Image (cartoon, rainbow, N blue to C red; front, side, top):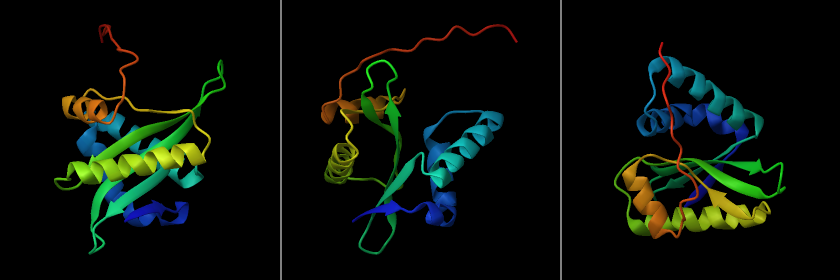
Amino acid sequence: MIIKVLQSKVPKIWDAIKLAIVNVNEMDEEKTTYYLNKVLHNLLSGKANCFLIVSDSNKIKLIIITKIIVNDITVGRKLFVQLGYGYESSTQEEWNEGFDFVKQYARAEQCDGIQFKTRNPKVHKIGSMLGAKELYRYYEIKLGE
């Protein structure tokens, strides 16, 4: 079963969301706090949405956080998957169910595509299996501190 978390219910599952964000993102503590606050603000203000795939016993299996991004040049709308996290080993069928839902939601929101970014090789593999194409590679040159 897939559930859209209402803005008013975000605080009730914030610990689960926070756990997913911390486990997926590799950030130091200072940046993690900033990022968590930003995600919480976006969820509470409706700028982002949270979806849960739950088991028959109402246990969270997968969590997905999305937001819509509008390209200022092309005026195209993309559904950006900010987070996809499985709390336990999820089957390919469950990931497919989640992705099918994300596609339906993107169409309902009049988006012309779905985007995500990651540096996790497992997510690269899942994205490829779902038909995603690599568009960019990001590089960084660190400057002295």
